[in-house]
Image 1 (spheres, helix red, strand yellow):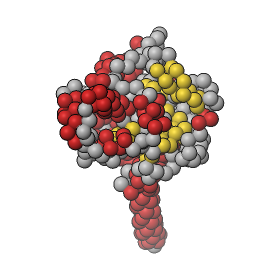
Image 2: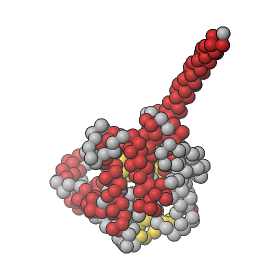
Image 3: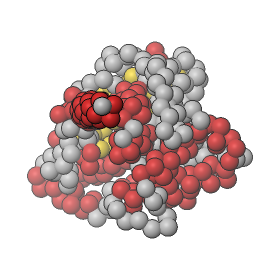
Image 4: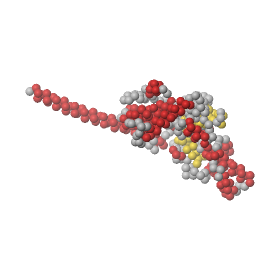
Length: 393
């Protein structure tokens, strides 16, 4: 992006004036109120995706914020049992239809250590009395089911706090480095949810990011995807815009790294020197993320940073505007059932309340200062009047 076009966009991004010392009202957010937890399959269909196997494709135009999927886990591996100790029992509880559906998911064989085969064979032969061809088939089935689980299971909560779960429908979502949906495990609902993070056209494939840090460069993303035997051909990885996108993503990483060091108090030539400059850097990160089409929950911490820098600068109106933008992102990525986030003193609503409390303290402080100033002005006026009376004698 050229400097003059960057400057033009910076004049009014997100309805929040970015030039120093000026604040305006936030534009009203068009939120989609659709938190129905049922899966409306009329919104999309499962069909072949070129070079990717099966995928999910929109059957209608889908607005940003619409919930597309809400489903409970078919299989859960608790954090306390990372060795699959009892997971085979869960596999055996599946109905024939569920077992067939799970068996149709993709799998990467190297996600299961080959050394496990001997241990599984020993357990099945001694504890469950399998033998001969039946034993061979049972060992093959368990190895395959483990590979399917390891390939498709996702973390339930931060750092897999609630375990890892296999979700049949959302497992069909393919990867893109410029995703159009966001998946998250909702603790309040005890389901994984998938929301559209931008408007999706009829016929367009629904995609999410398999990479935790989608802003990383192409080589880093390709290395992560290679483990899953996946080759990405999205606009960020293939086509005429790749070099420009890579340059912008490197700039995002450079800015984010500098801000992280600044927040830790480690200042050097690669960090902003004060809160005002940190805010400018943070606003550039926001702009570049959106320019790259990265409009899922990666935006939320970026808005939070900008809001926090505004608080530190005493720009409370602007801080609240950014806090509301964070809430908008949270709503269209996660929905409204986020009581678990507020209980943990996380999320945009908690931050908004915090900013409101600080703003109120500032208002009280300003009011007290104004009252004190008025008293001092009155004293000065009386003193001046007495002095004038004495001078006239």
